[in-house]
Length: 175
Image (cartoon, rainbow, N blue to C red):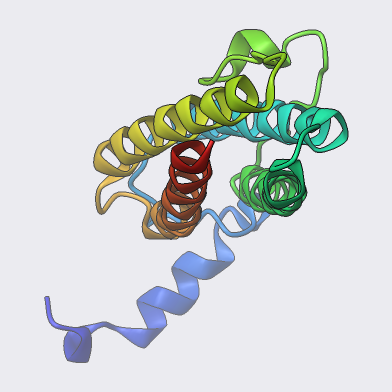
């Protein structure tokens, strides 16, 4: 069916059905429960990364710590923005964002590894970014064309995670 052959009356009638579902229309093709679960696990990942980056920001010491600390703080802020985008999408899909601190680390794709030296901190952040990159890429492939809005959310976050990994790799190389 081409877009020119869409019956406007049918669209209008369908839009009035199941209005309680908000943004989720009859045309939604994803497995909503599974997508919400993936979003919540990714939310946990982002929150764990915020906490790790914040710790690293405050714990960074040494001659080269100023550059790393600045990146840690910037990344913590961006990871918090990612968490907000994921939580917003969960609500749009009719779910509830899970901010329960008791289950965050268990649901997170990345681990919370604090590191004791600046080099260990940067290394652990790079590892966590690489985990996020692979997991978000897999989620994007799983979603495919079934939920283009959620896919775009993950694609935008993925692009920034790749930048974060590149930043950490550059800093690690200089240590």
